Image 1 (cartoon, helix red, strand yellow):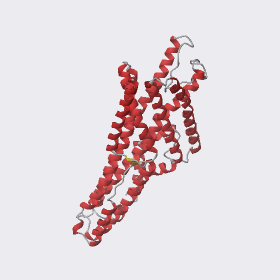
Image 2 (cartoon, rainbow, N blue to C red):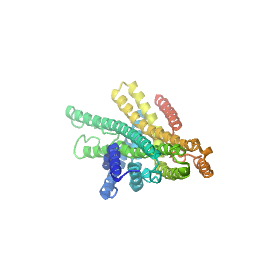
Image 3 (cartoon, rainbow, N blue to C red):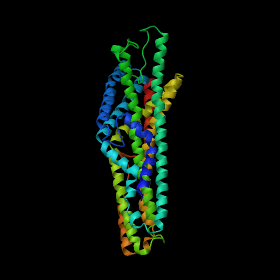
Image 4 (cartoon, one colour):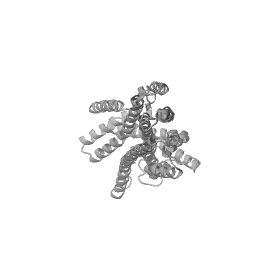
Amino acid sequence: MYSPEEAAELKRRNYRSIREMIRLSYTVGFNLLDPSRCGQVLRIWTIVLSLSSLASLYGHWQMLARYIHDIPRIGETAGTALQFITSIAKMWYFLFAHRQIYELLRKARCHELLQKCELFERMSDLPVIKGIRQQVESTMNRYWASTRRQILIYLYSCICVTTNYFINSFVINLYRYFTKPKGSYDIMLPLPSLYPAWEHKGLEFPYYHIQMYLETCSLYICGMCAVSFDGVFIVLCLHSVGLMRSLNQMVEQATSELVPPDRRVEYLRCCIYQYQRVANFANEVNDCFRHITFTQFLLSLFNWGLALFQMSVGLGTNSSITMIRMTMYLVAAGYQIVVYCYNGQRFATASEEIANAFYQVGWYEESREFRHLIRMMLMRTNRGFRLDVSWFMQMSLPTLMAMVRTSGQYFLLLQNVNQK
């Protein structure tokens, strides 16, 4: 479909669409462009980040133990702890599935499935192919533009949340250091945690610096690992949707007047071969994400309720800092699940339209072999593709609405417990 020059330009253009995600993945220990380059060094950095974050669990546990009766405080502590534990799980999954994720992303960046499509080689002499190619390129460009928008929105949301947590703690510590006597104030860490042995050390070296390092590692992977991992999902999911839409555009022209009747069977066979490639790619994407996303969905059920509860607490105490922080957190955490469910719905809808595209061609006036191929494809496409969350649910808009309702129930439960 593409000449070597066009393929190289396409690869560069698609890289520019996701360059922020690619660069950010280096900072959490992954090279999405070439796993063999600096692979050992990046793996060590991944292990260091994850172990440092796990070490900070001690501080979160101590915070929970001391303020066990303070529902708002233990709610935020538990929520942030669960958030970075989920990010650690994603990092380790990334570590062991790095090659598989790299191969899927490479196929998407290069449009490998479209380049292998026999339709653009065997039927290149037909005038209809030029129009199909223009339609396919327009469709793929539209979905790559959508990919870039989603990644940038997600990136900026996570940057706002992590920056708020870090700068707020840093500024408050500096203020207390210069305005209060030594040993008369408590330090504030980026995430709510407590280290009893160093509680009264203030900003002394190395006690304060060790605590800041551990909590900053946890805070960083909460946001940036999420962008790297979920960004790959956005790329692969929307690329799959683009491939399905492109396949429909090919199938729709199977009985066009621009395709000679004696070549329509061969044309349809090329479409069937492309369908098999798209089906394999869609199943690989589903297998890659179906189990690791289960922890994220469970976490979001709990954290949405916690964020709403913290917002109500901030509103009741007139704490603008808590209100702003929880609003930004809810936007980032909510957008994370919206990305999965909304794109999962687009994925399922696009797959359902494939069967309709095969049925709507003028097959009833074609040859017996053509009609037989259509019947075969109607049976094969009867069961569409979907993105699953483990074995329990599907990434779809109904799932999103069910999660919103359940989170609302958690919010009401926390309010009742706090009032009692």
